[in-house]
Amino acid sequence: MTAQKLKYSHDKAYRIIYWMIQHFLRGIFRSLYRVTIIDRHKIPKQGRFIMCCNHLSYVDPVIIASYSPRYTYFMAKEELFSVSFLSNLVTYLNAFPLNRNAMDRKSFKTSLNILKYNNILGLFPEGSRSEDGTVGEGKKGIGLISILSDAPIIPIAISGSNKIIQKPHKRAYFPKIKVIIGDVIDTKKIAAENDRRDAIQLIVSETMKSIKKLHSKIL
Image (cartoon, rainbow, N blue to C red; front, side, top):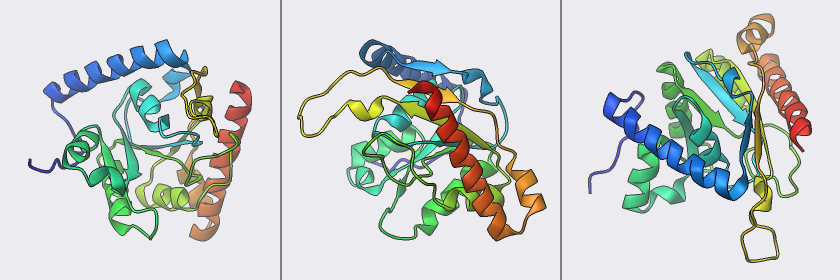
């Protein structure tokens, strides 16, 4: 099977198939987890943006992409790309591999290309899933990508998805999941008023502050 390549733009046929997949997944999520999306209208219809959300579960990117009004590209652990069929599937759905054990220049370059074509890049700034459901600290990578791409940030918070699998139990639960979208963070202004190092840290701080505030509203 020919390896699927990540595309930065899609034709009408793809849009129809993608829309069908989204609605199929929404039906499942509504039935199982009573998913509620708050302020979805705050996601801009055009332009490049980085969508930053706290991370609780492997299902987080699937939920967010299913309810996003635009294609949302996510990094995924590179192990998913070791099997041909699975690799083609997740690539078709706008995911690309990330090596979590090293500085991955390829995924960084892919992130910038996604934004170059005025798409939405979805990132989890904490870098890993939260085990206790709280929002942790952000990594500086989101600030650097934002500055290099001139992409504003859309803060998002999710709650409940960490309860789908609860240790040490080995069965699935069906918690209510909520997602809330915040106001766009003007990172260009931050970059213009500060040197790069300070701007990166300020962008990360402002992003995590916004996510924590949103998260407190849906707990």
